[in-house]
Structure formats: structure tokens, C-alpha cells
Image 1 (cartoon, rainbow, N blue to C red):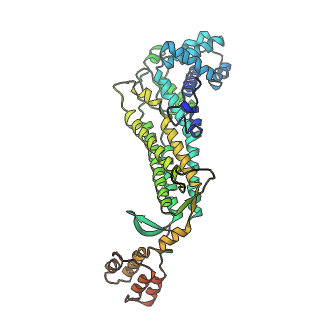
Image 2 (image 1 turned 90 degrees about the horizontal axis):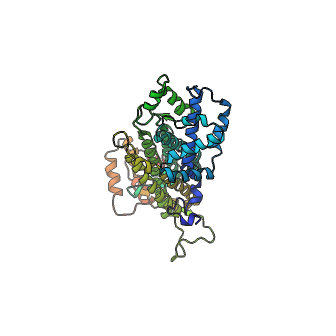
Length: 448
């Protein structure tokens, strides 16, 4: 049976495959195998470069051919390794045997026992997986989140002069500018993205229990710490954890999960705000011919993109939170519980990309209904009470807050006329009254 997206259990690989398919380059089974092959080959080449006894005569002009093993890695190669794994019941050992077979083909059998020399599986996994995460962030996630931030900034610029009634506790509050409210989210996202970028892509490379036992017993004259730091930090572009058990600490990966969760929380916050503005008729949505909003109510045009984004970001955050809590904990020098968890790294990133793209799609659909914003401001003249009492404080007017409270904190409607009448009755200089008369819900928007 040839599986298609219709047979996928997860919507990440099913319904939303078009949005997430690029992540298969980093987190599919084939990708994991490919990156393991990549690390094994680079490790072997690094051993040759230090002229390790036994490899000092290896023809360094063959390095390019060795790198072709991972550069030209194919689905057929991955299937071959999976067939070997059926026998070994060990995924990394199957990779080792695959590379050894390639060495036989290249007439390099005299050197093949230096493949995976002195290593444990986690020296490969805890470098291959961080490497794939680094690539996924750089090549897929960061461009996606940058597009969202760019869109938000664009709307902020477009609507920078549009006054809008603010709401705190769900109640009318001092007016703001619509563009500024979008800047809030752009700033928050940008700060957290930079925080994420600052977290090292941490990796482990140090043998069965992190002490280079096998390496040192075979070649005590080699500084294996320096060797591994160069391999991991320079060749792979990761950051080697200096003191480990059999596995990486995962503390830095947990920090990455927490950072991604914070970014998703901001996206959820944005989605909910836009959803609310749509429900208040501040925004309308572009209507696409043929689309249906409800199977029962023909008039419906629902904010489905923002709802979809909120749901997917929530799923992603649940997994990110679990990863951050679980992975740094492992019994003694290592248990296997991290293995199956690490295989799911692509899932929350998939849901995250769906959330980003859904939010972006929703933002591209909204249409400003300036008349609704104007009507809401005109219906809430009580919000200028803050402005009036503050000016009166400046003039040392007695009990200005209390006077405005008595006027506005009632169940009676406050409008332009009632505010004007209040101002006329104030015992203040005429120039102060002139300033107070000039204050409206439309211009009392402050600066930013």
C-alpha cells in the first residue's frame, strides 16, 4: 500500500502536509538517517586529518568521495539501512554497516573499522539531531516567523494614524492607535526570536559515558577533548557540552522549546485579539467565491484562520512544554526515554509552522472597517474623563478625579454634550476650558 496524506494519522503529515512538507528534510526518518551518515563521515575525515595512527596513510584526496556518501544520500540508501536495522534491531549500528559497505565498494576496507571508532550511538544522535534542528530553524522557521513579523509591521505602518477605542477588562479604556497595537506584537515577537537565536545548539560527543574511555585507552597521546571540540564546534557548527553522561544534557534544547513556546503564546495572543476585533466588526474579512462558513447558516464568514492558528500553536506548546520538562531528566548516566521523545521534535515545529501560516493568511484577509471604530469611539465619550481630570490636576483644581467619577461612573450615557456641559461649569481659566473642549475620543490617543 502506497501511503498518501489521506492515510496519515497526524494532520501535520495529512491535512496540512503542504504547509509542513519542508520539515521532512530535517525530521523524517530518512532525514535522521542522512544526518547520522553525515556525522559519521565527518568524524572519520577528522580522524584522518589528525593523522591518527592507522589512518596516517589514508589518501586525503578521497575526502570528496566520502562526503558524496551523505551528499548524494537517497531514499534507496535509507531503505537499505532500514533493511539492515531489521536484523540488527539497532538504528545507528545499521548506519555504521551501511558506511562500511560503501568503504568496501571504494576499496577502503582497510580503514572501515575506524568508522564509528570509540563512539556510542548518542555521539551520533546528539550531534545529528541538534544539527537537524539548527538547519530547520535557520532554513524554515526563522524565514516563516520573519514573514509574520514583516506583515504585522506593515499593518502597523498602514494603520498608524487610525484611532481606536482600547479595552481593559473588556471595558472601554483610553483610546489608542490601531497601528500601535500591532507594533506591540511585532516588538514582542522580534525580542523573543532574538532570544531564541541566542540559545546554543548544544551537542554531546564523548563516548559511552562522556569520558572518552575507549578513545583514551586506544590513543592516550591524542587530546580527545580538543579534537571533539573542533569537530562539533567548527565542522558541525554546534556547541559541544564539555561534561556529559552518555547523552546531551538537553538543557539548551529545553530552553529552545521554552523560547518557541513563548513565541507561540504571543501568536495566540495576537490571534485572540484579531478574533475579538472581528467580532466587534472592527475588521471585515475578504470573501472568497465558493467558500462556505457554515453548513447551516449561509451568512457566516468566520475567523477560521485565527482559530486554526490558535489551536495549532496550543498543540505545539503542549509538546514543547513536555520536551522541556522531560528531556533534561535521565536516570544516572542515561536511560532510553529520550530516544522516542526526540523522534517527535518535528511535530511541534510542524504545528508551529501551521500556526504561523494560518495567522499570516488571516492577516492578509482582514479589511479595516474604519466606520465601526469611529462609531465605537463616538459612543464612548466617558473615556476622555482621564484626560480632563489630569489637566485639572495640573491646574490644582480640587478633587478633579472625584468630580469626573461622579459624572462618568453611572449608568447614564455620557456623550459629547454632557462632557461639554461639565467643562462649562468648571471654575477654571478660559484657556484651560479651550484645551478641555479640544479633547475628543478621536484625538486623545497619546504618543508612541
